[in-house]
Length: 263
Length: 332
Image (cartoon, each protein chain N blue to C red):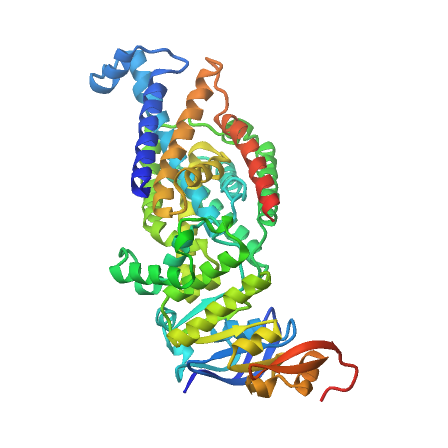
């Protein structure tokens, strides 16, 4: 069962065609990660799937239904989106930020229901932020701040969570914390995760499916083991990688610039 | 402290302050009055008493004018800052006041016999035109425009429009009529003006209070708001209409007074936090506190001469603006 499908999607951004005739399928209940070099169109694709950009051609299907035929207020109950790290909202407290996650369920002037409060507490607990709930975002570390944004997405209580490079600017430990939290959401709560990542080893370790994009076009997609191969990495990133296996997942030990021909 | 209690206390204290300032403003000025005269002017008005006439026909409308202006300027400031996500936004700094002033000059130059309502509409049109201009400029770039660039474009627009106003005034010998608008002041506010303009400000304030709950969304990026299922453009457009009405009206009433809209929202946020349902009412009252206080200083500091009211506010506003610019620069 696919939660997202794109059919011959073209997207222009800043008057340039950044995605060309892209058709992908993203299965429900799994972690699917988009990889590819900078400027390949990962973010553009993420934003298109999230209904933040309109394709100039082609169709995006959410749960087998054309996404443009759904109301944005209904889409917000099906998928939560965490855009690339932004510096807004730093004056808010963690709890205030997480409360925004309940907006799709609230009528304009209604106050919060008991369910809203429960979901907010539960999201804070999931992201281990109970002790930080009254702290302002500006006083938190990068990792804590990112967990707060993820908690907002958790509170939104959607089957699908979309994250655009959730570990950018974080140090090693905090990157791991964020990835483990995402993995837990997938395993324990069966949420579908769609994200873009730079770190190939994280992508390999934590994902079920990978979608590799180069110059706005689909390069290769499928289970991690099928995508992370020496040949594919040469084609996608122009690198020659030494790949070993760890816990039955491919890991890149080291890599060099690939000098040969790409296929 | 409980947030709601904290809000109530701040609201009550600023209302009390406003009441005290209003009483002081009616009592003190170039013409000294006994408290009994003030009391009589309000409750036992005698037409032939000059002191009572001054209070009833000059001072009271003037104080009400100051209150309305403070509310309008602070209200448009808080809206501008949140819809542009720019802590340095203010209808004066972004050039909207100067656009309104330019259209006022045009109306004086070419339609000298227009009624108050007529000149007000000109002023609102000027504000609307400039707001659209500022927003077109700020949306030319896809990415969020940096606060500094928005402020710089606003200042350029402001300088340009002021130059045209001055040129028109010189050319057509309007200097005398307009001098007053350049300095800004509430000294000439009359009952007639209040009756004509009051309802406009009331409409602006009603829209503003209606928007308050939605304004909280503007803490987030446009992408986040959309993915929460809300359409932010409706809020933006309503907010812009509100800014145009409020700043257009205040310019037609007192001229281009900058900085009220800049300072007050920051003070309100500093006092009360991040919830616009609380920030907005507090901003409106604190705005009135500032303008009534500035007007009181303007006419008591060097009697019987009036010190321009805009000057008093700039005296506080400019250092505050520099402080904000520094603070913003450090964050970036």
